[in-house]
Length: 119
Image (cartoon, rainbow, N blue to C red; front, side, top):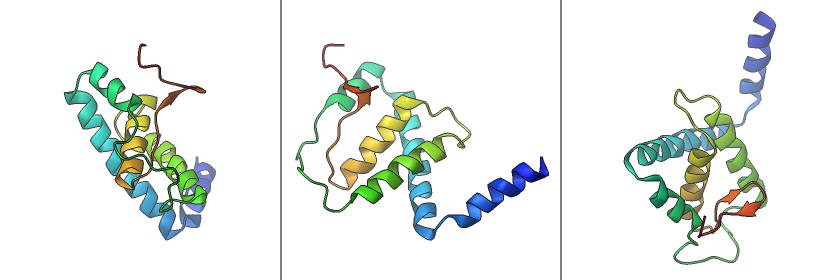
């Protein structure tokens, strides 16, 4: 048990300030997604996840590939540790909101295919 704690502490200490910033944003986005999930019908949520951004952006200049990978990592890492259930739907909601706030496009996918509007 002590070795496991030491390994986790070592990993936490190796994170950069930017990693911690992304984790903090991920926790906030997951909390907002959880609140929305609790107060909104699921068909409305899935409809929103299928929608393209209102002002589509071909490239996301503000977020580079490294930041997109860090965003994905931060949401998954935070989802595994927050004290509420954060399954794939909440993670998709959080990621989509985060990317849209940064004016990046993105639609949710289930597995390897896009969500069908008729499903």
